[in-house]
Image (cartoon, rainbow, N blue to C red; front, side, top):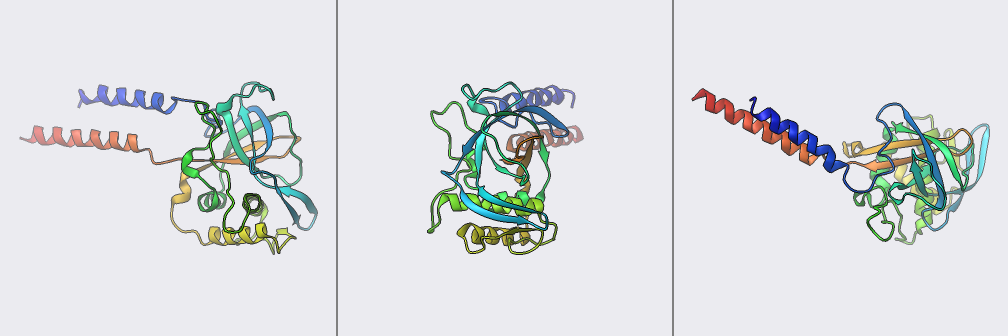
Length: 261
């Protein structure tokens, strides 16, 4: 067994090197517990414009504006609007109805966010999850991760607005079931396409069974003066470590059988 330990230790040292190769992701500096201070550069819409939404967070607050997916940059290092580190580009949604977004570099605090209902929404409805969750600086253009597409008679802005409405519902609703027509959070444009799509997704969230949502990790970006945001990363199975572990246990079993002879 002593001969196997150096091999195992070397493999574990190489694994982080492989994981950290390539461009830096926006979430690479966010700790699994606690938070990190950084800067967020809000870069506007990710889906070609927003669909107007009218929501009521009963009984004390009304919102009449636009909803949809945003995009921008996050870094623990200083950012400027003219020189962004492209490898820290990401897309995100509003999770704050009480403040406004601002088109400038702003101080934000980033942390992990736990909301299983919201993780299920991402697993059901977020597009292109396997293409990655950030802009790979080695490519000449931004990848299409997370961008909604036109289809089925519905525009990408409708899909984007539907996802935003669903995020607000899951963040603000206090009842065990979710829809946009009743409860703490309501959308007053009940006949719109975005509303209808969101209600369909929310019903799927409430009926969700299985463990696929556990592949999603959520992140919060909080500001004292501007909108707070949520983003997500899809994490695939750690196949290399599983193979390493299987190989190690196989060698241990072979050693035992050899010693028993």
